[in-house]
Amino acid sequence: MTKSDRAPADATPYSKPEALTEWREQFGYLQRQAADAIGCSRGAWGGYERGAQPIPKYISLAIAALSLGVGR
Image 1: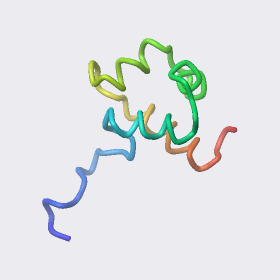
Image 2 (image 1 turned 135 degrees about the vertical axis):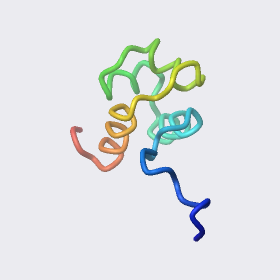
Image 3 (image 1 turned 90 degrees about the vertical axis):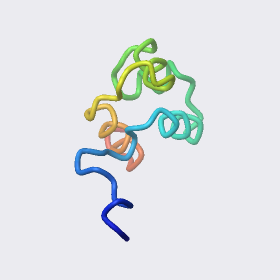
């Protein structure tokens, strides 16, 4: 792996809009359910999925935690 292949140091597993959509669909959530699961509004979730606003690091980390079964 070269340096250019590595993710930036501040990158989190769900920092891209496509990753949020894939995660939500994998778990069978509607946008409202995904937003409720991580504690944000449905409007904010939709904005993250569309790429209209950056995905905060704490949102990405909350999704990663839910993926591991933390907090369910």
